[in-house]
Amino acid sequence: MPPQRHAGPSLLALTLVYVALMFVGGANVKVAFKEPHDSAMAAAFVAQNIQAIRLGSFCEFVSAISLGLFMAISISWLRFQGTNAVGEHLAALGGIATPIMLTGSAMATWSLTRPGVAAPGAVEALQSMGFDGGGPGFAVFFGLFVAGVSVAAGMHRRIPRWLLWLGIAVAAAGELSSLTLLNFKAGYFIPVLRFLSIFWMLGLAMNLPTASPVSGTTESGHSAPSNV
Image (cartoon, rainbow, N blue to C red):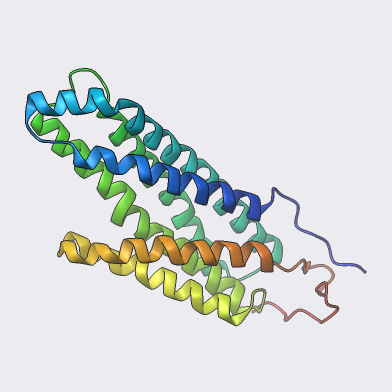
């Protein structure tokens, strides 16, 4: 019996959309963090850079949607494959929380452009919320998602071992980024997760097997290992 392919949108297309939005959004969002804290200067700065800040916030918001779709499809694929339940639930936790964190970051940054908000206290609070959600908050839960998918799929040999270990490295960077709350220098783990995760997402998109739990075979004709 030929293997059944898991139906759903292309993970590769979603990855490319997410990466493009991440770079465009990041290049514009960083403008918001250069904003001066003086009340009069802050208002003038926002007025001069309002389009860049809004574009960056919009791209970050839409990237959360594309990433959320990627995560939902990946978790659906795990269920289709009948993989480890613990890894599946861990991935689900990260898959729910990560887009929420990214969306909150985008909304906080966008709020800087609202009339009357550009005051010293509000600027600092919104900047902090934007960084917290899009920084350690995003990284920690994204790491949990990657760990869940990688371990569940890797232990059942649904993905190559190099992709499993890359996923573990991404997850480790994500969890270590939580130390940013104790020492700001730990924030360097956040860009490590962001860039390594791009290769992990591409690898997952291009290496998902078509093994069906009904057929028990893969496209190459080899028998798939039974579930534990």
